[in-house]
Image (tube, rainbow, N blue to C red; front, top):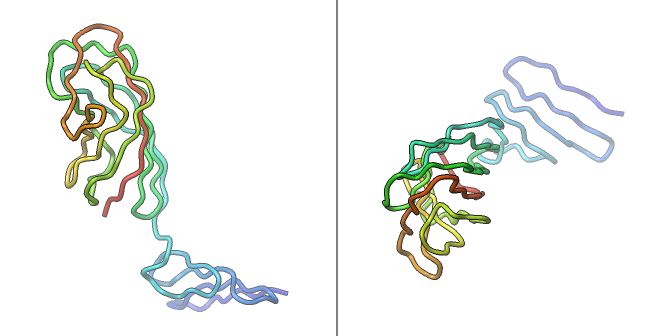
Length: 159
């Protein structure tokens, strides 16, 4: 037995014999298991692509993201990058502005920078990632050359 509420300007409620399972709030968003708080409602979900840019290079690549509420998961594989100048290693073009400080981004494979790196961080109030030198807070430098690559992923908070 289940029932569905269908009144305008009221939530749409999905019940089972065990109680409420899901609620679509009239103000927007979905809550679960009897929670009625607007602040806890899942009110945004999207998947998509973005154009990732790389400092010191005119090369770009397609990045992928999933956004659930304020949480953004990104994956970037920059391959065949033509790096023409030495500069601070920054990846740009994130799909949403970073709103939480010190969000770590993990780096897997890399020839884009001139030194070993394991991670970077998504820059607060920006749409960029700074790539850090290993065991340091300093930003790595780009490595000039053709066919450079970098694989990275991470999760950050947006508004």
